[in-house]
Image (cartoon, rainbow over all chains, first blue to last red; front, side, top):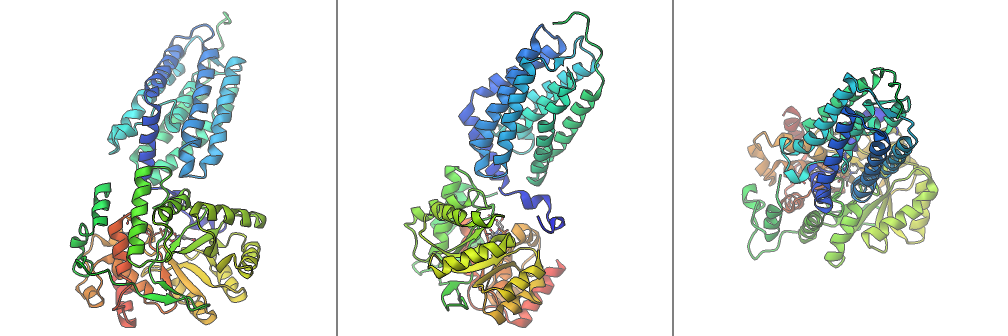
Length: 226
Length: 308
Ligand SMILES: NC(=O)c1ccc[n+]([C@@H]2O[C@H](COP(=O)([O-])OP(=O)(O)OC[C@H]3O[C@@H](n4cnc5c(N)ncnc54)[C@H](OP(=O)(O)O)[C@@H]3O)[C@@H](O)[C@H]2O)c1
């Protein structure tokens, strides 16, 4: 792009807030009541982080990966890409992230921190805050409840919730698995900012917190291997 | 923010206009005055001096309510005597939205379709133009412009060949906000162009010094984008009272004052404000009417708006 310094964030916003909010409302209406199911899945993941069970990682990560693929297809590809051609590139990245999570979980390339430590408890709390709190932001930002964004169905809470889950893992691959969610968090913050939504500040805040938690070195695993 | 009801109210005719003053009020039983036209220098064909942009405003995806609102804007645009609609493959779903509106209106004969080619590889130009034709649902574009000078050498060759074969009527280039000014001028000076598209309004006047005079000298029509700085200007001006002297040139709103300033420049062919609102499209078309400001009044408008 020539003369890139003459462009601001708003030059890249190609739709109005009204169009964006109506798109989310239409997605919610089409997918209802899946919101209840994905919210429960998020809460179960938080519970498993706090009280790890045998084989939990093999379930949590593949389910999470499946949700990324749902977001990639049902929201990004089918809907969001109609008003934002940049999403044609984001959707495959979401699908790839879904596959990576599935493989990493099934092959146990990463594991939940066990025994749980302060970092994993904090990560679980962050996950609960995102899963329950993110949908409630819509009314606080002047939107209607039908524009609530649910974990597992819409990209922003899914990316942030995933970062919280990754913060509760051990294994170097957790940082690789954080690349797409962090990249999306940057896109999400920029989009919300240019849409004039104050909630954009929560995106870097949650991302920084999750990455900071992930950087806390996990204690060595307990002798009992699952 | 407006609601669907205000838009449909605008469609019905009276709502909104009452607030805009006598110059805009619907005259029952009397057709709206036809807007001032400007000749395209290369052929003499007349186009109304205010057209319609579609960046952001027409990018509504598959939302049926919003698509109908856009169709209502297009209907009001043609009813008020508008001709030029400008779009680009860069504008998301704006092209299919235009196609939807045109199909609903039975493809108005007055349409002057202004499209763009926007791709970095020259060989991708023709398929992109073909796709755009399909989305608009028209057999041929009146004008195809090289968007933001992207790969302009290759695309201008393609467009020259298409024009020679009768597959496009006019050829042009675009830029905005003064970007790549030098290169833009050199293309204007060295290649045969029917149109250029640039940014011009009472606050963005750099084009007055070189590009607008060059367009006159070379016989190139000028389309003006971002007349309201993407709405930032009209929103800012809304906090200030319209000066009493605006009535001397028949401007009943800030938007009309700005548009009258733009289209009164002798090099300007057509300004293309974008809008989601029926009342605004009517207001904008109504600005293309006499009296237009003379040089002294133009300076007064620019000075006044520059101070606010
Ligand atoms: N490089 C390029 O080729 C290039 C670059 C920029 C733009 N363009 C073209 O130029 C067109 C115009 O530029 P733009 O869309 O960026 O900005 P613009 O036309 O300066 O501003 C559009 C904004 O003005 C508001 N508006 C329209 N009529 C109004 C009125 N009568 N009173 C108050 N507000 C009014 C609209 O809001 P409402 O919906 O509320 O009316 C809309 O938000 C584009 O749509 C595009 O087709 C081309």
